Length: 297
Image 1 (cartoon, one colour):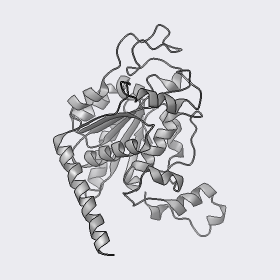
Image 2 (tube, helix red, strand yellow):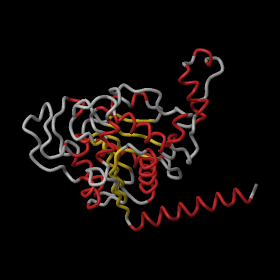
Image 3 (cartoon, helix red, strand yellow):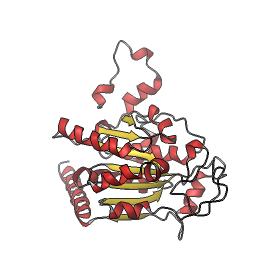
Image 4 (tube, one colour):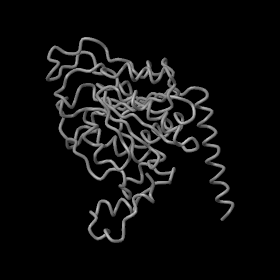
């Protein structure tokens, strides 16, 4: 996709919905400096969604979609779950895979895109819930990391199966009681960030989505590093407020509590040495361009 492909046809412009007209007028395609601050003035990637009122996943979607460097050259691979309710509303190419095999689909897709477009970056991003990532799809997830596949995996950590009634998942915290886990979780939360690190991921981050600047930085780091070096993983705490007994306006407070000092989701980041070097080179190049631009004025 590119901005040229979404241009309005003059003969049909008067009957196109206003949302599409806004998409064309405010698109940030082609601008790698795009970020979460563009949400207020540009909405080409997501106009609305069908998630529950106040759902933290809806916040996460907006921050992620505003942070990907090249939406026109990005393909998302999703899986069954709450995320699959949003992708029909997203103006980025996406594939809905079977439950749990999203990383296998992404592996084949990324390789095919590399063959088809050898001289162009085509970013593949897996976005799925904890059930698809750490439970049913753990084998596909880890095997893609073992192989060193160059794409990003994002997990929306609800700490339960939010889409099917509140069953426990591997990422549910120990002892938590839900509607379909009445005796409480019997084992500790699976430490998937640590597993990702040991499985060969070049960049791993765990955080909530309460602070958009942190989400933007994590997503951009993950995408840029995956392009050049290997697999990256981002785990975002997006609590299902419906299943944990919160009101629609309490999702942000829940995330802030979880990331406070001593909380379960204090931001953690792991970057390999070669990834640090890559990011440093990119930052130096960015500063050089700004300096050159100022000198040219």
